[in-house]
Amino acid sequence: MTGSPSSTGADSPDGGPVLELRGLTKVFQVGPTTVTAVDQVDLSARRGEIVLIMGPSGAGKTTLLAMIGGALRPTSGSVRILGREITSMTESDLTDVRRHEVGFIFQTFNLLESLSALENVQVPLNFAGVSGSAASERATGLLVNLGMESRLNFKPDELSGGERQRVSIARALANDPSLILADEPTGNLDSDQGHEVVALLRRIAKEQGRTVIIVSHDQGISEVADRILRLRDGRFTAPQTQAG
Ligand SMILES: Nc1ncnc2c1ncn2[C@@H]1O[C@H](COP(=O)(O)OP(=O)(O)OP(=O)(O)O)[C@@H](O)[C@H]1O
Ligand SMILES: [Mg+2]
Picture 1 (cartoon, protein in one colour):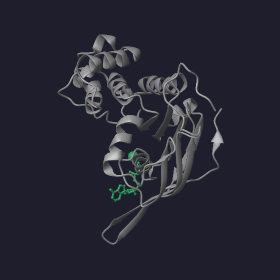
Picture 2 (cartoon, protein in one colour):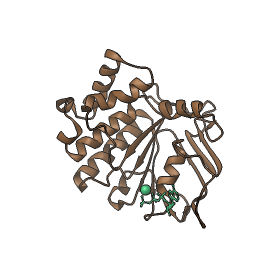
Picture 3 (cartoon, protein in one colour):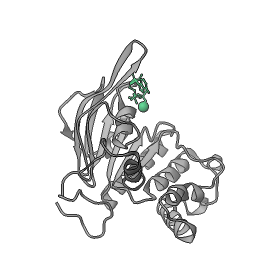
Picture 4 (cartoon, protein in one colour):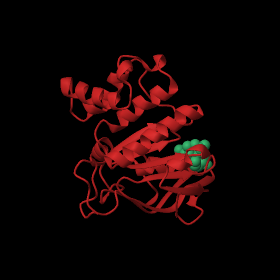
């Protein structure tokens, strides 16, 4: 598998999957109650692939995504991003992977309310050591590419839901990650805005060669996925099938 020269993102050094999960498990213990939120999950995703993970509330979707993105340590099992095992990394190596290889998109956007659209997109660039005009040019380019050229200086509360989600997509793309993780990205949007957002995510996967993992219970977005997996009680329930 070789990448097209015009694309960003990357395969793992051996040309293997961008993301590989093996036996991924998270057990929470709250007082006397044990919850196996994610139970022995295996998954492999390629460059440019868009995978939709659907499941009811409490199925373990957010927990799974948090472990993939290195925000939550698994109880057992492995997460490989570009061939690198992240579960045994030190905090500082993990922070580095999170910053450079993973972009997160949330249902509630998680934008900083006091900052403009442009400034919100610059935040992760600043954390990665890019500042000044380089950061502002990169952030502007990302927002323009998502149709936000006339809203650069608007604050989140001056934007529609769909526009806010586009800012958060631009922010997720800031450091050119291989992997985009989206947790219910259409959850706070009406169906038109939701379709627009998932169409953008598909474009990001296909044109830019990134791997996009969406977790959702929004049945209306299933047509954008290359693959749909069903999660229930922390496990995939049906064999992995190709969509459409
Ligand atoms: N920090 C935690 N401590 C204890 N239990 C937790 C924790 N986080 C999640 N759980 C439990 O793990 C299970 C899966 O939670 P998770 O948030 O992953 O579900 P979800 O599929 O994202 O649900 P929703 O669609 O409602 O967002 C739930 O039963 C929840 O109570
Ligand atoms: Mg959730």
